[in-house]
Image (cartoon, rainbow, N blue to C red; front, top):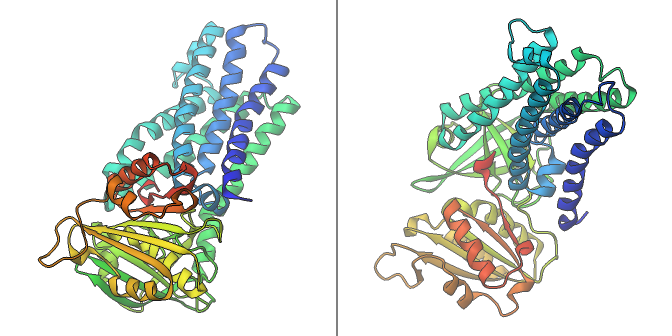
Amino acid sequence: MARRLIRPTAAILYLAVVLVPLGLALRSGPPRAANPAYEVSVASGLVALSLLAVTFILPKRLRSLSSGLGIDVVMGVHRLLGVSALGFALVHVTGVVLGDPAGRAVLDPFRGRPATRAAVGGGAALLLLVLTSRWRGRSAGRAHEAWRALHVLLAMAAVALCGLHVYLLRHLVAQSAFARWFTFLLALVLAVWLRRWVWRPLRALVHPYLVQELRAESPSVTTLVLEPWGHRGLTRFRPGQFAWVRIGRTPLGFDEHPFTISSPPRRSGELEFTVENLGDYGSAARRVAPGTLVWVDGPHGAFTPEPRRARGLVLIAGGVGITPIMSTLRALAAEGDEREHVLFTCADRIEELLFRAEIAHIASRLRLRVVELLESPPPGWSGGRGRLTERVLAAHLPRRRADLDYFVSGPPAMVAGVHTALRRLGIPTSHVHTERLDLV
């Protein structure tokens, strides 16, 4: 299915997950449906549970989602539905309290029934999930690993306790329509959870990689070369995709990091990850010894050109953002692509312009025009100076620029600025592709 069709399809599916329980509640309400507040509480509670289930499923590394929608869309919808689930849960509690004076007992977890205690526990876990999600972008290294562990545990608690609340109430699951929907959600959540936390680690366990080589690309950037150990390796992926990498004795744990694959697909299964030596994990990757076991979970992501969809590609990289673009360039060179392409590489200093010699070699094999920009150029620099602005883009893009596909990778501020400049130049939004691994 073409990528432009996948996003509307996913939106329809997510909408259906919300509307189905709402329709069930309105069509076959429970015995007390004459009470409007109670009716609202039932409908909002079912919608909250459905939203919570989808929110739980989205980040579980389903390749069909991450490769079709892109990690930006998946994680954006994940956060939006999480907040929406909390909102519907609050409406549900309000409806219970207003619809039945005895419902105020839901606010007292110590004297309530088991169903009430499960609801309070699930609601508290959901509230903490939403509140602590703000810490994600502020944490790094061990703090980020602790945040991930807390986030996963809270999500499991919220889903389990809210599901237990519905089951213990009995009056909903006693009705066939609600029971079938509840069973469907339960089966889906369990299947996805087992796939993420049991099947994928077991699969990684029998498909380890070994560190073959460490290659310094600059004083602050290192390429980690991995070879499969006892298996074929990852031979089929799309240039520009990423994988989760974990260095350690087992594939279990939260100390892993998403890195873009910088090598093209190879029959040998050998993989390369170009890593910036920043943070705990980047620094650890630079110090790892050859022969160390590494676990790879991938491929994921949709930062990938569709074969021959456009007349050519415009690849825009800031600093280490050249990593996914190198995978694309290497693949284009291996395929002997004959289209016209343009590459913009931007950095502060010349040593931050990575892979210059290899890019020059690739340019001799492809119809590739390379534009280099430095903010702090050395004496005698003959390339571009300053930042990549709308004026610079307009000066170097082909005349039929709206027929090209654009892939932008780099620091968030640079990506946002380039995206705005391209929009002002009349480039259709559907032709501009970005992906932020700091979202996952």
